[in-house]
Length: 311
Ligand SMILES: [Zn+2]
Picture 1 (cartoon, rainbow, N blue to C red):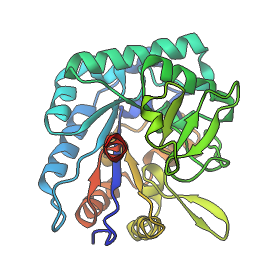
Picture 2: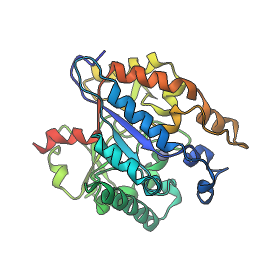
Picture 3: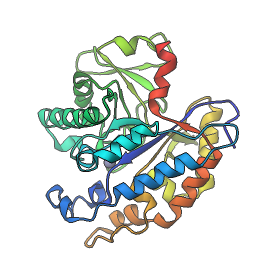
Picture 4: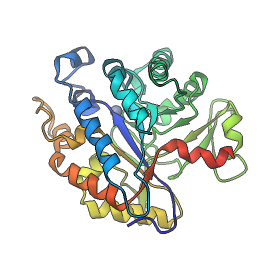
């Protein structure tokens, strides 16, 4: 089933390995990452092959935005080139996968600049999109937006417009909008669909934001855009949410991590019950759900959202 009103939906993949997720960060430190078996390459090839093999009726194969961690790109340069060769968008997930709130502005700048350079050197193409580790742009870390612009990113997809223990900004709009940073210390939110739509592309003080998808039920926002929510809730719930968002005339943004399709990732000891649940729940069900999603809907990379604005 393809959205009847021809709305473009977006697919995003955060390219990192299981030992880098925030839920495990109390047990596995970055200096220990090299000690763990990397499974990301195999899992990304699985996703690439799946995207090439599933063609929803009357539509072409889906294409995605891959937010790639610089640490992974350095170790798997061929993988980055292959993602690019198969027609997907290369975007940045930063270099070292640390929460923005745990970095100084200088450290953050170095991290996102380093990742951008690695990716651009591999593909020869400008990287314009960024996603923060663990959606860590919040009210407390809005300073990061200025640095994203300074370094040359044009859009951000790092905000979950809900309340959550790690992340969340329930006050921002549910759908793509523009941050106007030329407003002193308080970035101003402007609608993308009003007169600022074209302006932001050339205006150095504006950055486009793609918040993660939510549905509103009884005035409450519920996350439904992928990741753990996709693993925990039945597939029909995701499909219903996607339809509901498209019926509002808006695009759905889906995200997944390669390790979420891999029930063979090692079981890490000494995790809290919550971290264990968040990381391992329903890993064996994700592949079949993801196949259904790709069969039912067509997806595009986030950068295609910009094309109508450029014309
Ligand atoms: Zn991540």
